[in-house]
Length: 389
Image (cartoon, rainbow, N blue to C red):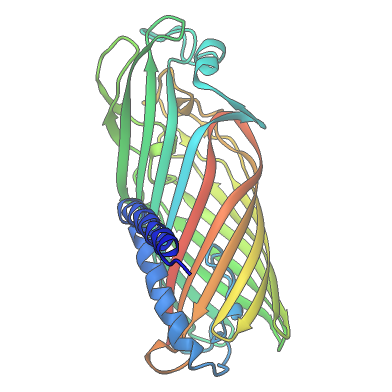
């Protein structure tokens, strides 16, 4: 048998795989470094636990935890602590009004500018956001002072980037240029209590009761490109601010159940604004989430989750935010969204890895009905580490 063709094909396939690996590695290093690092650690944990597959105690099995995108999903035993870190990346491209996508040229020729009549304000929108990304770093701690109460605190650091296209003043579709707005800093801080209502062998129910403290800024500014070619520094619209500016109530209730290797759960969480800041309050938010998990081994489970949230329009207006861009109009916020998420949980069973959890969840939109023209979310990924002791 002539081996030369076989060797030639093998060499070409090897080179192709090496090239694709270099491209994938560059993308992960450049865009999702925390996720890449987390997946590498998860792979190592998977290999180690494949050799140490021993059942654990409560919350020491992978499926005892909800998908990593669910907050406040479990309580702890008296005297137990837990530390956590979550990283969330959200990517948005293009715009949508109601249930339909809308292109930039249509936006600037058909959507009226709410601020028309003020000096230098054209009749239609002239600045269009085209792409946005948000990275959120969340650091949390949990402690159970009694068997029925678990206390939880979470702080966050947020980075937002939004790219815009500016059209020339007046009307038409002639483009003047583009610019990017970036804001970053500390977000709002959350303090919660998880109150056990029922804690059976296969059914668990607890209340979520918390408050969000307005530690995130609502007065961030940045340089923009105007339709007339100017580059002033202005207060950026609501979507680019880092906090709500208000004290918010965080009510909720969480249910979890299991039978053999199947685990399931449901949760309602609300965000209710108290008062106003800078002349406005963000809309109230209500989220319903339901998930189903399968535990392959005590150290690994996979999950499927549906989550729906509805967000109200902004109430009021910041007098320092105005311009021919959709994000400056408080009516262009809120709406209804239904998402599907796929997740993996890994948790250590023995030795130094016992009680340490690594998890990742990818969320994709199924249906969106947005108030007015808004950017549409394409995908969200959440990765996290937790350590209970």
